[in-house]
Length: 265
Ligand code: FAD
Image (cartoon, rainbow, N blue to C red; front, side):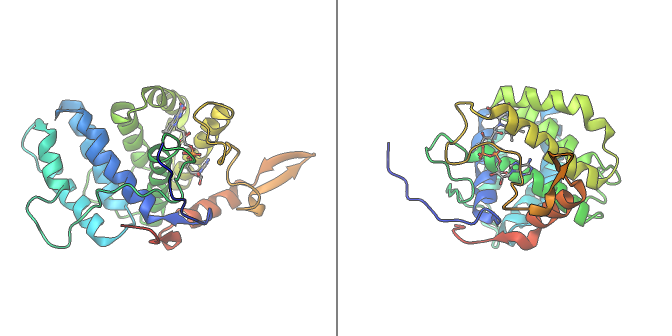
């Protein structure tokens, strides 16, 4: 295997490079597994891209690209499109200035100690958490899309994307099971943020010691005490969460002011 150059990074930051590399993988690799998109699959993609386009907090050229893709998908008169039509848009074949998404993978906070570890799946989690936090911070962002006013809208779009398109099929099934059990109880945007956090920790605990665990990034309840001391409490000698503090921490950690562009292409 090729030796990889390690990029030093700060675990308390969110890196644009991870989110943009993840979007590149999603749009140019994951979706490319389909030669065409139609019917319910196409609607799932359209809703997911709508949520991302309206809530992604990254750099303007990427946001404009997502906006263009969203407007195109939302206005399609067709029920079936070839994947290549999506790719042409993502590659900006029309050469509209100020629209661009890197086609290079550059993991920073999502680097793995081996190439098959972390990377895309890590970036997808980060994207999803970012979306739930942005939906809370910008309650009007989905106005006019048909998804407004529904505190579950972001999670439902994520759920359908994961079930339909995520290359890891077992992951999609596990996530679907968790959604079926409890997503229906989410009534506010704060609860949506906490729901995803809680389920992600369940996945972490299930995967501790699994071959997909990166030894350099052991699975542990997150945020760890070094990242958020106030998130942890002791109740009758047992470690427990202070959920008010967790919510504040998530809003800060996945908020746009925590995004740094270091290493972004
Ligand atoms: P990840 O779990 O990918 O997390 C990325 C980053 O998010 C962490 O580095 C940390 O900064 C932050 N984070 C960690 N926990 C939380 C939390 N609770 N809330 C908010 N932020 C947090 N793999 C399987 O083998 N089986 C599965 O069933 C499975 N299901 C998955 C379902 C989904 C929806 C996704 C996106 C991935 C799934 N994966 C599954 C992949 C797996 O969860 C990890 O993404 C992968 O093992 C890489 O782990 P990681 O160390 O990069 O941390």
